[in-house]
Image (cartoon, rainbow, N blue to C red; front, side, top):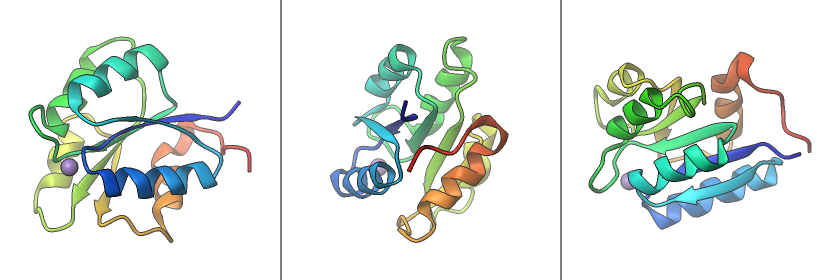
Length: 129
Ligand code: MN
């Protein structure tokens, strides 16, 4: 069975690129375009990993991360924050909010998948190729 990644991202181009890269590496991708939708999906499908944009309209990525950690059903799911490279302090705040790691935007197609695997670390097996 393919591991499922929940992608919470409001920007269509970023969603497209991340989905393309993940699917090419054996992941199943489910996408949400805002925090509340992401929380609902996370609880329902319990993905192997959540890729969380920090700059979301309305509920921010930090708030989403804290809500995921509060909820027992999603508390153990690894979260990788997608932060803006230019925003100093985003990474520290993302980790403080409960994220397990981060990736900077713009997404680098050459390192994206390896960065995700490194963040998953002990929690995950490699997906089938
Ligand atoms: Mn965004």
